[in-house]
Structure formats: C-alpha cells, structure tokens
Image (cartoon, rainbow, N blue to C red; front, side):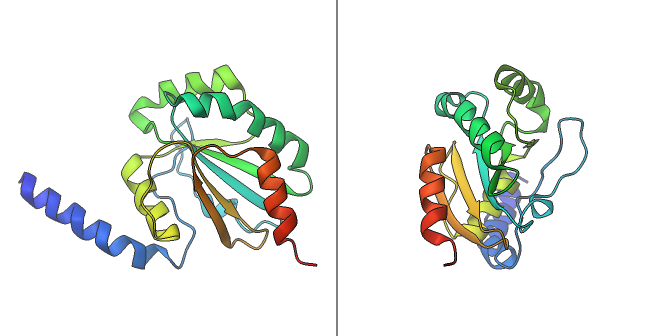
Length: 167
C-alpha cells in the first residue's frame, strides 16, 4: 500500500507542471474558518500581487511579515497588494492563527496544505518549493513574473515593479 501511494505521488508530481502551467493555482487553500479559497480570485485584479508562502515556525517569516504588512498597507489602494499563505496545514491552523494574532498583518492570509501548494508552485514556476518564506509576484494582468525563495523587502518589490511597469 505504501509503495502504491509513493508511485501515485510521483506520478502526480511529474504531471503537475504540465497541468498547472495554464492557471494560477495553489491547491488546498482554506480560510482559517475552513472555507475554500483560490489564489486566482486575487490575481489579475489590476494591481501587482505579492504572494508570501510562510510557516508559523519560520524565523525569517516572523521577522519579515511586519514590513510586508506595512508594504501592503501603503500600496494596496493603488499599486500592489500582498496575500499570505501559511504552509502549516489546516490541521495546524491554530499555529497559523497564533502567528497571525502576533503580527496582525494588514493583508489576507490563507492556510494551505504543503503538498498541493508545492505542486502548484512547481507548476507555475518550473521549480521546486524550497522552503519558507517564498514569494511569487504577479503583474496587474495576472502574469507570474518573479518567484523568490528567501526574504524579500518591500523596497525590492517596488524597484522590480518600477523596472517592469509599461512605459
């Protein structure tokens, strides 16, 4: 039975990039109260979107989240917003909620299951999800233009956006 599961997982992982390339999908997202959520509902809404994949026990995530909350607060009305996705998984949503309660971010956050999120990330980027924090950046039209494992500052995002805005 275990070998069968491993083979099925391997097949899903090999086919995931082909299936997910055509859409913006991080599977298995839920709100903290258990409702299904879709990243696609936030992408392509006329503003840049920075997606932060985080975990409650990630030291860098804990350090970076307040600055990204400030970035979202300052720019979400006109230029860019942020969406957070906890990789703690729904069964550990209490840890995700405690993280959010500590930081009180100004942007929406969801809880994702690691494997579906990792498969969606690989499908969109062609790369494996290496850990947290990891960031995805979408244009106002919804095109994924950057991904970054590791910390990202709001200033770096603004410089990237400035270089890639249409003239």
